[in-house]
Length: 104
View 1 (cartoon, rainbow, N blue to C red):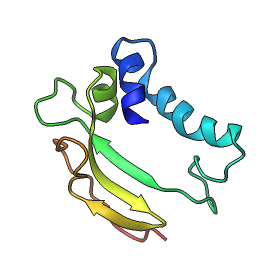
View 2: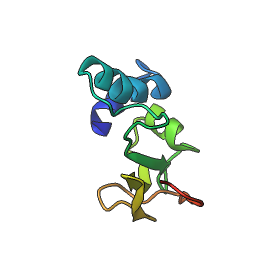
View 3: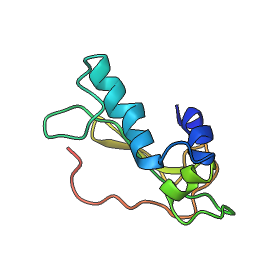
View 4: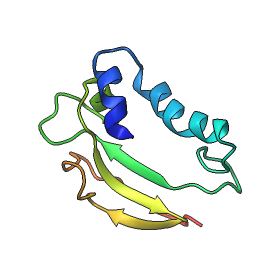
């Protein structure tokens, strides 16, 4: 999904923030899924991302706007952090997200 967003964002046809909403919440709503939006009592898997080392971007959304694959640094599934520091499927993020407190 992420790679499908990169081209239209990179050529400035889509703003990255609404593009992410269209790819998650809007799709979930169209298919009548409980997932896809962050809300109390709703299931949610999250990923936290930033710009990759060497990118001209300064954050994750700017990375998408440049057409760069962002670096995913944290993945949360069912309230549990399953990836911390770096996802092996993306280049390393220049910054690593910090998660504190309860996720459940």
